[in-house]
Amino acid sequence: MTRVRRGYIARKRRKKSRLSRQGARSKLTRTIAQQERRALVSAQRNRDRKKRDFRRLWITRINAVIRKKGVYFYYSKFQHDLHKRQSLINRKTLAQLALFNKNFFSTISNEVEDWKESPKMISI
Image (cartoon, rainbow, N blue to C red; front, top):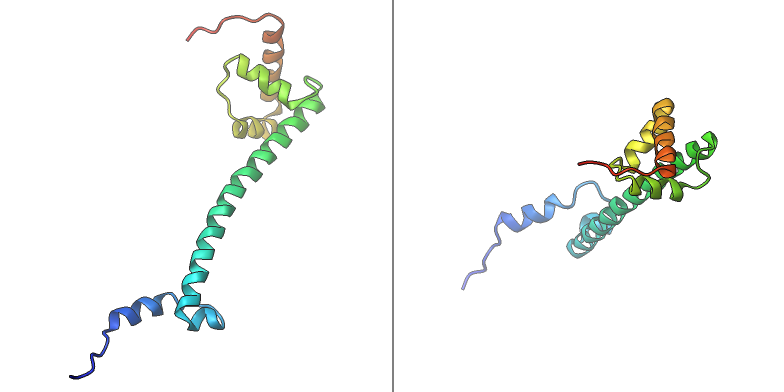
């Protein structure tokens, strides 16, 4: 019986993943597959890390402006009062307001402070 010569499809699949790497990562099929799996894991981990880092940045910016204005001493109290007031402004928006439109941010913080002294029901 004659030997079966493999087609080009498997070669094409392996060749596709061998682009722009060095050493065994471009020569050995098993090592290439391991490297690709590891890259996917790293990508997922870093996407989660990016979300965490941005949240920390927003909280830091809001906290800095709050303390500078002297309205609140703690970010957590400000956030708690916003939540009690049923305000739907997220941290990203608050951080942008704190950075670029400080007058409007101080208006928001003053309203929250006034509301804290005399709470009113918000009609929906």
